[in-house]
Amino acid sequence: MRLVEGRSLAAEIRRTIGQEAGRLRAEGAPPALAALIATDDPATAWYHDAIARATADVGIDFRTVRVEPADARGVIDRLDELSADSQIHGIICLTPLPPGLTLARAGERIAPRKDVDGANPTSLGRLAVGLPAFAPATAQAVMELLPAARARLVGADAVVVGRSDVVGKPAALMLLREHATVTICHSRTENLASITSRADVLVAAAGRPGLIGAEHVKPGAVVIDVGTNAAEDGSIVGDVDFDAVAGIAGAITPVPGGVGPVTTAVLLRNVVAATAIARRR
Ligand code: NAP
Image 1: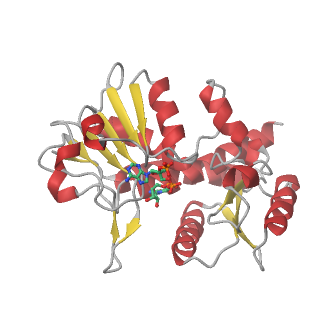
Image 2 (image 1 turned 180 degrees about the vertical axis):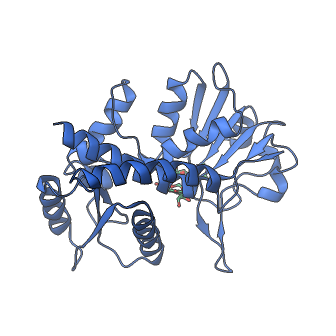
């Protein structure tokens, strides 16, 4: 079984970004990311702080925009302002959002050229039809881990568990683009194991700790665990029961240390790309 470490891949991506960010800064265009936050959820605060540290490491400016009190109008107004702000090149809208506001609705207010986490439905639509767009960083991270897992995609059976707009759907679209035969499962799927156990490539993105056990995995399959769930003891666990699956899978990503660090690195790379695009305009 191959353990597909995300940290080393993330470090490699960040090295390249650091150089590129330094070059843009020297040219007078320091890349800048804004994170909008409208919640006091501790997991969101943790992700926000991780992004802040990562941007500092690679030389990207970072601005936090807090919406307090958290209401839908405030989120929309701040996103409109950030979309119009020439000093900001990338915008990420952290979740959860205030009641009544979906990420798709908020994402519509992020200018597509600054939509570094693929939240604008336009980005997902462009991805679907093969036009250039920023894909959600997590889904992109899944795709970037597959070569390290030595996954064969052309003609392979790929199963994605989860159909969210930010992980499951875009991951499925990108697997399809790579000529896999893709099945998407969700909470209403009947007999999940009968479907996942056919998968050559299995992407678990349900947010259910231990959902994927030995019976869900085909021998030799590549298993990418996107799940990031808080366990009772405070640790972070994936959707895959790692110990049960490790002896069956051909390759597997750990949690933590798999998809997570690559997601952050991809987000930063998108900010640098958005900055370079803005400079050419
Ligand atoms: P989400 O919006 O809650 O979507 C979860 C999806 O899983 C839904 O489509 C849901 O089906 C499906 N699902 C739930 N229970 C299921 C079950 N028992 N069997 C099959 N499908 C089931 O979550 P998300 O934002 O996509 O995130 C998914 C996981 O990835 C979470 O653990 C999240 O923390 C993690 N995540 C990690 C990163 C990272 O960088 N590592 C980034 C983002 C998210 P329905 O549509 O029918 O409800």
